[in-house]
Length: 78
Image (cartoon, rainbow, N blue to C red; front, side, top):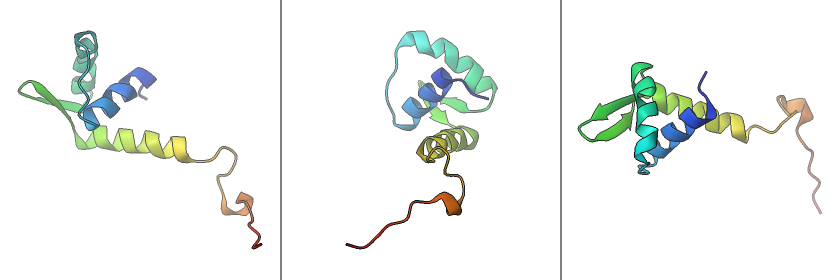
């Protein structure tokens, strides 16, 4: 499982955000684990990296305690 700092790096790469040199040392583990690949001086997400970012974003969007349709809020027309 990825740590928050690793997910932050993946999100920055996916959004083409430049990051400080001190974070580049952490890139080696992400490259080794198959989340990132290096293309010259640039870093790109692999399919595995893209999936990790998307899964994390989906988990953040899921309402807490509302994992099934029966607990969905009801709306009333006014």
